Image: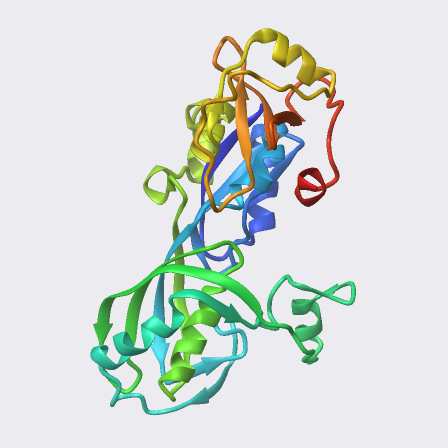
Length: 312
C-alpha cells in the first residue's frame, strides 16, 4: 500500500498515536507523517504509507494553514491549552484594531524561539523531556515564513478572544506566534484551540477520520503517489530508455531538455512518469544533466545522502 492519506486527527491524541492507529487499521508497516500536530490540536495530519514515505521531504515544502483561538491576557507554561496558567493581566483595553495593527510584524520572514514544550532536540534529548523535569535551556531563534495572517473573529472582554487564520511554512509554532503577538500587545496570550485546515492542496474537508477507516473501505480515501507527485513537482514523461538508464543510476543529457518550468524557490527536482503515466522516479537537474534521485522500483541504485550533496 503505497499512497498518501489525509487523516483528521482529533484533539486529545498525539500524532504518534494516530500513526500507530492507522498502521494497525490498514496493516501497513511503514507509516510516517509530514508534520506533528500537538496533542490538543486537531485537523489535517497528512500520512505517507509504504513507498510514499520517500516523498516526505518534498511534502515539507507545502504551506500549512491553521485556525487558532487566541486568548489575550493569559499566559500558560506551554503556550497552549494544555499548560498551567503562569500569568494573567487585564486585556480589556485591547481592541480588534490594535490587534490587527501589530500583525504585520509577524508576517513574512520572522524569527521564532522554539517553546520548551516542543520536539526540538537539545544535546540528544527532546525539549519537552527537559521541560517536564523543570529545566529551561537556551534555544536559538529559527527563521520561518508566515504567508498570511488575519483576524476572523474578535470578542472583547477582560480576556479578549481572537480567531486567527495563519498560512505558514513548516516549522512554524502557532502557539508561539500567539504568545509573541500577546507580548507585542503587552498583555501576553496563549492558543486556546488549534486546528490545521490544510497542508498545501490537502484540505480538512476531505480528511478521513479513524472511525471512517475502521468501518469503511480504506482504499476509497487513499491518494496515489502519482497524484501527490504532480501536486508537488513539475512532471516529465521521457522515452523509456531514459527510465532504463535511471534504473542503473545513470544520468542523461536529453535533447531537447525537459520542457518543465522549475520553481524559483525550490531545488530543481522533477517527477518522472513512465509510459502508463505512473510515478517512476524523482530526478534532479544539474546544469544540462538529469540525474535520478529516488527511483520507485525494487532497488534504488542511486541515492545521494542529501539534497545539498546532490546539488554540489
